[in-house]
Each structure stands twice: as structure tokens, then as C-alpha cells.
Image (tube, rainbow, N blue to C red):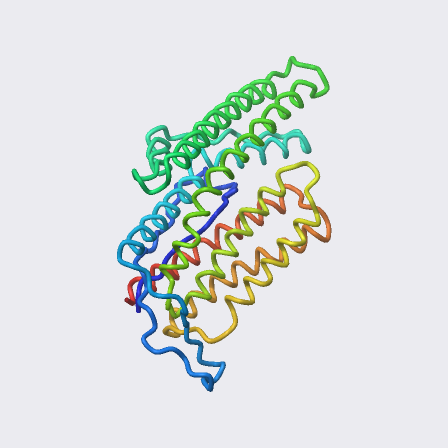
Length: 329
């Protein structure tokens, strides 16, 4: 079968709290276009036999080439924003909120300058892939992200020194001041990150749909993307001190819909591959259970870390599915 297209569209708000503490080993699937189905299904085809059908004319080779490059860049950018210093923005705000609640401060994650430089290069699009205006806005967003995370790390370092200074007796006033500054910088980081990914996804989403034309697992792949998008949007909604519960409930409904779409038969591939995919759905369902716990009670810091772990496990399981699918081609 043709390569699975691993397009993890994270408004990443990607937002993987532990990703900064270890290298992101996400395996990127090949982005080769799937062939169009040779025979359209007849009206009397039983519903158990799912056959993709496309009404529009097939894309040209030039269109497919651009779509392939757009999806590849989207994959690379999403991965970069979920690793290194970019992932640390969400780590540091989570640590800061835990400190303000429990007065215990976790150690600031280390950075890898060389690795971060490599991540930054993955956020620079190939020449001509986006319009000059889009490219300019994307570069400005990356600059704003870098500035915000630098500010967060500096304030967090000062917060560490403050916590370690036993002579300071101010009932936590300065700690709260550092916390407010970190939260302000994180909010600016999220705005810049979302602005960047809004441009990327605006171009990559239709490109990916073009590449998945006629793919036998199109529904399952797109369901996975919706699931990962929920992970990212949820993390963004949980950033404020008082999250928007209605928006969270809507995301939970979207997650349920995506899980249902991904899980319903038929699965037009080998049984071993289906088991891999259902392993991914099982991990994503664990995230959904934790999400329900948060809606029923509160999204306390320990629960958020559990949700993050479930999201990371889901990503790893999906990468296993992609790897096996690409090996079976």
C-alpha cells in the first residue's frame, strides 16, 4: 500500500509539557501522494466496503509537488515547536503554576543550543513555498517566540534564585511577581506560535487533502490529525488561570467524534496494521478519560501532567503505526 502521510497538525499549541526534557524522536512519514482509486464504488456497494471517491479532477504533477512540500514543512515545523526551547514555554508555565499553588519549584530544564538552532532552521520555509507576506509574518512570529521564551527562562532563573534565598521574607510577593512576568511572556509566546501555525495549517490542510486523494486510510489518518489538534488546543485553553469550560466541553465533543471516526470499520489495510492503529486509539482514549476527570473536577497540575503523558503515548503509538505502514508499501 502507499505511504501513510504523517501530518500531525499541532497548533501545538503542541504543548507537550515533558517534550523539552528529552529529545523528540517523532518519526516523520513520507509525504508521497496516494494514487486515485481506479474504480468508483457503485450505488449498491455494501456500506461495509469503504471505497474513497473523488468528484474533482485529479491534481496536476506541479500541484502534487507543492502539496507534498507543504505537508513536509508542516510536519517539520510541528515537530520543531514540540521540542527544545519551544516546548519549554509550556513546561515553564506549568512549573510556575505548580510553584504558585504548592510553593515548590521544579528545576529549570536544560537547553541544547545546537539542537535549538537546528529546530529554528526547521521553521524557515523553502523559498517560494509561501507568499512573501506570509513568509514575513512567519519570520516575525518566530522572532516573537524566541524573545518570549528567552524572557521566560530569565525570569524563571531569577525565581530559582529567589526560592533558594532563605533570607528573603516577603510572604512570596516577589515569587508571585516573577510568576506574573512568566505568565505574560508565555501568553505572548502562545499568540506568536498560533499565528505561525495558522499560516502553515491554512496552506497545509488543503494540500494534505489533495495528497490523501483516494487513500484507503484517509478517514483514519484525518481522524488522527483531529485528535492531535484537540491535544494542542486543550493545552492552550488550559493556560489561563480560569479556563473556558464551554470551549473545553466543545473540544471534548470533537475528541469523541474523532475517536469514533477513527474507530469505525472498515479498516482498508492488513490486520497487523489495524492493530497498530487501534493501539493509538487506545492511548488517545486514555487522554479522553483524563479529560473527563478534569471536566468533572478541576484540571489540577498532576492531572495535566497525566494528560500530557497520555498525549505523548498517543503520539508514540501513532508513529509506530506510520512506521509499519510505510514498511508495508
